[in-house]
Length: 231
Image 1 (spheres, rainbow, N blue to C red):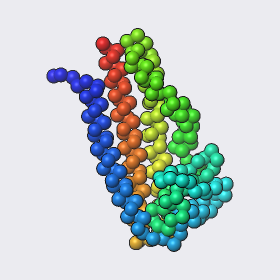
Image 2 (cartoon, helix red, strand yellow):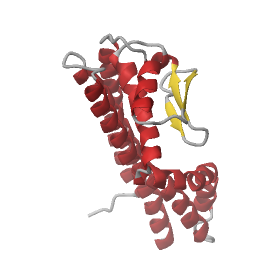
Image 3 (spheres, rainbow, N blue to C red):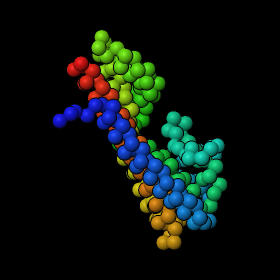
Image 4 (cartoon, one colour):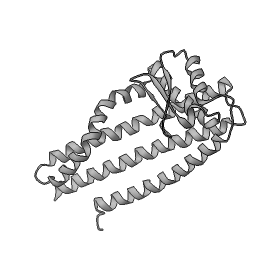
Protein backbone atom coordinates (compact mmCIF):
# COMPACT_ATOMS: atom_id res chain seq x y z
CA UNK A 1 0.00 0.00 0.00
CA UNK A 2 1.33 3.42 -0.96
CA UNK A 3 2.34 5.57 2.00
CA UNK A 4 0.65 8.96 2.23
CA UNK A 5 3.09 11.84 1.78
CA UNK A 6 3.53 14.53 4.47
CA UNK A 7 1.94 17.10 2.16
CA UNK A 8 -1.12 14.93 1.56
CA UNK A 9 -1.53 14.23 5.29
CA UNK A 10 -1.12 17.91 6.11
CA UNK A 11 -3.72 19.01 3.58
CA UNK A 12 -6.18 16.46 4.91
CA UNK A 13 -5.66 17.75 8.45
CA UNK A 14 -5.67 21.38 7.31
CA UNK A 15 -8.95 21.04 5.42
CA UNK A 16 -10.56 19.21 8.33
CA UNK A 17 -9.50 21.87 10.84
CA UNK A 18 -10.48 24.67 8.45
CA UNK A 19 -14.00 23.27 8.05
CA UNK A 20 -14.40 22.84 11.80
CA UNK A 21 -13.05 26.36 12.38
CA UNK A 22 -15.53 27.82 9.91
CA UNK A 23 -18.44 26.06 11.61
CA UNK A 24 -17.24 27.15 15.06
CA UNK A 25 -16.94 30.79 13.93
CA UNK A 26 -20.50 30.74 12.58
CA UNK A 27 -21.82 29.23 15.82
CA UNK A 28 -19.81 31.72 17.88
CA UNK A 29 -21.16 34.71 15.95
CA UNK A 30 -24.74 33.46 16.20
CA UNK A 31 -24.47 32.96 19.95
CA UNK A 32 -22.83 36.35 20.48
CA UNK A 33 -25.61 37.99 18.44
CA UNK A 34 -28.26 36.14 20.47
CA UNK A 35 -26.66 37.17 23.77
CA UNK A 36 -26.36 40.76 22.52
CA UNK A 37 -30.13 40.91 22.16
CA UNK A 38 -30.63 40.03 25.85
CA UNK A 39 -30.75 43.37 27.64
CA UNK A 40 -29.32 43.86 31.14
CA UNK A 41 -29.33 46.81 33.52
CA UNK A 42 -25.53 46.84 33.89
CA UNK A 43 -22.88 47.69 31.32
CA UNK A 44 -19.81 45.56 30.69
CA UNK A 45 -17.71 48.05 32.64
CA UNK A 46 -20.08 47.94 35.61
CA UNK A 47 -20.12 44.14 35.55
CA UNK A 48 -16.32 44.07 35.57
CA UNK A 49 -16.15 46.56 38.44
CA UNK A 50 -18.59 44.54 40.52
CA UNK A 51 -16.89 41.18 39.87
CA UNK A 52 -13.48 42.56 40.83
CA UNK A 53 -14.96 44.18 43.94
CA UNK A 54 -16.80 41.02 44.96
CA UNK A 55 -13.51 39.10 44.82
CA UNK A 56 -11.62 41.76 46.79
CA UNK A 57 -9.44 42.76 43.85
CA UNK A 58 -8.52 46.44 44.07
CA UNK A 59 -5.31 46.66 42.03
CA UNK A 60 -6.82 46.03 38.57
CA UNK A 61 -7.94 48.88 36.31
CA UNK A 62 -10.71 48.57 33.71
CA UNK A 63 -9.90 50.19 30.38
CA UNK A 64 -11.85 50.68 27.16
CA UNK A 65 -9.95 49.58 24.03
CA UNK A 66 -10.57 50.09 20.33
CA UNK A 67 -11.65 47.29 18.04
CA UNK A 68 -13.83 44.25 18.34
CA UNK A 69 -12.97 41.05 20.23
CA UNK A 70 -9.91 42.80 21.67
CA UNK A 71 -10.94 42.05 25.26
CA UNK A 72 -8.18 40.73 27.51
CA UNK A 73 -6.68 40.73 30.98
CA UNK A 74 -3.09 41.98 31.03
CA UNK A 75 -1.22 40.82 34.16
CA UNK A 76 1.85 42.91 33.30
CA UNK A 77 0.04 46.20 33.95
CA UNK A 78 -2.93 44.73 35.87
CA UNK A 79 -5.65 45.90 33.51
CA UNK A 80 -8.88 44.40 32.22
CA UNK A 81 -9.21 45.74 28.68
CA UNK A 82 -12.75 45.75 27.30
CA UNK A 83 -13.59 46.43 23.67
CA UNK A 84 -16.10 49.04 22.56
CA UNK A 85 -18.70 46.29 22.03
CA UNK A 86 -18.40 45.34 25.72
CA UNK A 87 -17.37 48.36 27.78
CA UNK A 88 -20.54 50.48 27.45
CA UNK A 89 -23.03 47.85 26.27
CA UNK A 90 -25.95 46.66 28.39
CA UNK A 91 -26.51 43.08 27.30
CA UNK A 92 -25.71 39.47 28.23
CA UNK A 93 -22.86 39.19 25.72
CA UNK A 94 -21.06 42.21 27.18
CA UNK A 95 -21.63 40.93 30.72
CA UNK A 96 -20.32 37.47 29.83
CA UNK A 97 -17.17 38.79 28.14
CA UNK A 98 -16.44 41.29 30.93
CA UNK A 99 -16.91 38.63 33.60
CA UNK A 100 -14.73 36.20 31.64
CA UNK A 101 -11.83 38.66 31.50
CA UNK A 102 -12.26 39.39 35.19
CA UNK A 103 -12.17 35.62 35.67
CA UNK A 104 -8.56 35.80 34.51
CA UNK A 105 -7.88 38.53 37.07
CA UNK A 106 -9.33 36.24 39.76
CA UNK A 107 -7.12 33.39 38.51
CA UNK A 108 -4.10 35.65 38.78
CA UNK A 109 -5.05 36.83 42.27
CA UNK A 110 -5.61 33.29 43.54
CA UNK A 111 -2.50 31.79 41.96
CA UNK A 112 -4.37 29.45 39.61
CA UNK A 113 -1.80 26.93 38.35
CA UNK A 114 -2.42 26.92 34.58
CA UNK A 115 -2.38 30.73 34.31
CA UNK A 116 0.93 30.81 36.18
CA UNK A 117 2.31 28.25 33.74
CA UNK A 118 1.01 30.25 30.76
CA UNK A 119 2.56 33.44 32.12
CA UNK A 120 5.89 31.64 32.56
CA UNK A 121 5.75 30.47 28.95
CA UNK A 122 5.06 33.93 27.50
CA UNK A 123 8.75 35.05 27.12
CA UNK A 124 9.70 31.73 25.50
CA UNK A 125 6.68 31.71 23.19
CA UNK A 126 7.26 35.36 22.27
CA UNK A 127 10.77 34.50 21.07
CA UNK A 128 9.61 31.29 19.39
CA UNK A 129 6.83 33.08 17.48
CA UNK A 130 9.25 35.64 16.08
CA UNK A 131 11.91 33.14 15.01
CA UNK A 132 10.06 29.94 14.14
CA UNK A 133 8.98 30.77 10.57
CA UNK A 134 12.50 31.65 9.41
CA UNK A 135 14.12 28.77 11.27
CA UNK A 136 11.69 26.23 9.78
CA UNK A 137 12.05 27.68 6.29
CA UNK A 138 15.83 27.52 6.45
CA UNK A 139 15.64 24.09 8.07
CA UNK A 140 13.55 22.66 5.20
CA UNK A 141 16.06 23.94 2.64
CA UNK A 142 19.03 22.60 4.59
CA UNK A 143 17.50 19.41 5.95
CA UNK A 144 19.95 17.14 4.15
CA UNK A 145 23.06 19.03 5.25
CA UNK A 146 22.02 20.56 8.57
CA UNK A 147 19.00 18.64 9.96
CA UNK A 148 19.57 20.05 13.43
CA UNK A 149 18.23 23.41 12.25
CA UNK A 150 14.90 21.87 11.23
CA UNK A 151 14.76 20.05 14.56
CA UNK A 152 15.34 23.32 16.39
CA UNK A 153 12.49 24.89 14.42
CA UNK A 154 10.19 22.01 15.38
CA UNK A 155 11.08 22.52 19.05
CA UNK A 156 10.24 26.23 18.73
CA UNK A 157 6.92 25.45 17.08
CA UNK A 158 6.20 22.81 19.73
CA UNK A 159 6.49 25.55 22.34
CA UNK A 160 3.78 27.59 20.60
CA UNK A 161 1.61 24.48 20.36
CA UNK A 162 2.14 23.76 24.05
CA UNK A 163 1.10 27.33 24.80
CA UNK A 164 -2.12 26.81 22.83
CA UNK A 165 -3.02 23.74 24.89
CA UNK A 166 -2.05 25.34 28.21
CA UNK A 167 -4.38 28.19 27.27
CA UNK A 168 -7.40 25.85 27.06
CA UNK A 169 -7.88 25.17 30.80
CA UNK A 170 -7.18 28.84 31.53
CA UNK A 171 -9.97 30.00 29.21
CA UNK A 172 -12.44 27.28 30.22
CA UNK A 173 -11.89 27.95 33.92
CA UNK A 174 -12.30 31.72 33.45
CA UNK A 175 -15.64 31.11 31.75
CA UNK A 176 -16.79 28.79 34.52
CA UNK A 177 -15.87 31.39 37.13
CA UNK A 178 -17.66 34.08 35.14
CA UNK A 179 -20.87 32.11 34.69
CA UNK A 180 -21.01 30.99 38.32
CA UNK A 181 -20.52 34.56 39.53
CA UNK A 182 -23.06 36.03 37.08
CA UNK A 183 -25.64 33.57 38.36
CA UNK A 184 -24.69 33.97 42.02
CA UNK A 185 -24.71 37.77 41.87
CA UNK A 186 -28.07 37.88 40.14
CA UNK A 187 -26.79 39.79 37.12
CA UNK A 188 -28.13 37.06 34.87
CA UNK A 189 -31.31 35.09 35.48
CA UNK A 190 -33.27 32.26 33.89
CA UNK A 191 -34.22 34.49 30.96
CA UNK A 192 -30.69 35.34 29.85
CA UNK A 193 -28.16 33.11 31.63
CA UNK A 194 -28.32 30.45 28.89
CA UNK A 195 -27.47 33.09 26.26
CA UNK A 196 -24.40 34.21 28.21
CA UNK A 197 -23.33 30.60 28.72
CA UNK A 198 -23.78 29.81 25.04
CA UNK A 199 -21.60 32.75 24.01
CA UNK A 200 -18.76 31.73 26.34
CA UNK A 201 -18.95 28.06 25.34
CA UNK A 202 -18.72 29.00 21.67
CA UNK A 203 -15.74 31.24 22.44
CA UNK A 204 -14.02 28.30 24.16
CA UNK A 205 -14.47 26.18 21.04
CA UNK A 206 -12.42 28.71 19.05
CA UNK A 207 -9.47 28.07 21.38
CA UNK A 208 -9.88 24.31 20.94
CA UNK A 209 -9.81 24.65 17.15
CA UNK A 210 -6.76 26.90 17.35
CA UNK A 211 -4.91 24.36 19.47
CA UNK A 212 -5.82 21.50 17.11
CA UNK A 213 -4.70 23.56 14.12
CA UNK A 214 -1.35 24.21 15.78
CA UNK A 215 -0.99 20.50 16.59
CA UNK A 216 -1.77 19.52 12.98
CA UNK A 217 0.91 21.90 11.72
CA UNK A 218 3.42 20.56 14.23
CA UNK A 219 2.74 17.00 13.04
CA UNK A 220 3.28 18.18 9.45
CA UNK A 221 6.73 19.59 10.27
CA UNK A 222 7.67 16.41 12.12
CA UNK A 223 6.66 14.33 9.08
CA UNK A 224 8.78 16.54 6.82
CA UNK A 225 11.73 16.12 9.17
CA UNK A 226 11.43 12.33 9.42
CA UNK A 227 10.88 11.84 5.68
CA UNK A 228 13.75 14.19 4.85
CA UNK A 229 16.06 12.32 7.17
CA UNK A 230 15.13 9.01 5.52
CA UNK A 231 15.83 10.44 2.07
